[in-house]
Length: 185
Ligand code: ITT
Image (cartoon, rainbow, N blue to C red; front, side, top):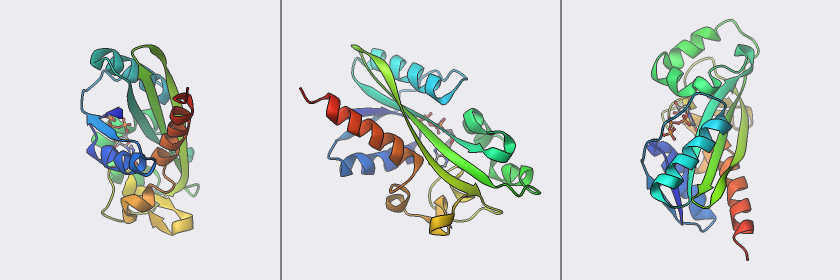
């Protein structure tokens, strides 16, 4: 069993289904950990270290963000703050006259145990910033994130569909493969 530390219930819902498909049980604890400002990797490392030493067990945390190429990677590591303050409509405004709509979601999983140093696992997914919000599934930036191959935004996909190729699926799959391999004696 693995313990996922997050305050975001949507992440838990997605992660539970992903772990289930790999036959690993996932426990969720909303511990709250100090999020220093920095690269996704640094936040994941410090969060995982903090939570595993506090709970005295192996944990994963995740730090994610939306990186828009035409805005030099904004909101990136500021994604949480931007989501809570100016929100999706302001991102659309910033992108109003911009042709280059390329964006990617990144997810970094931090894994740490009381006995080992933290490790990180990066997953990404490519997409575009839509011209208007679409869909009512998902959360946060999902209605903005358009995926050409599906001709849909993340918010128009079911969790199962999003889980087939999302940044979170990719980072968790890399983590799970490593985890399974490293727990073989
Ligand atoms: P934690 O407790 O796990 O930190 P959080 O919601 O603060 O939860 P992050 O800092 O990792 O999560 O995420 C940065 C922002 O990006 C935040 O506003 C998230 O809601 C948003 N975000 C992350 N993953 C997303 C996804 O799959 N779809 C849409 N928005 C996402």
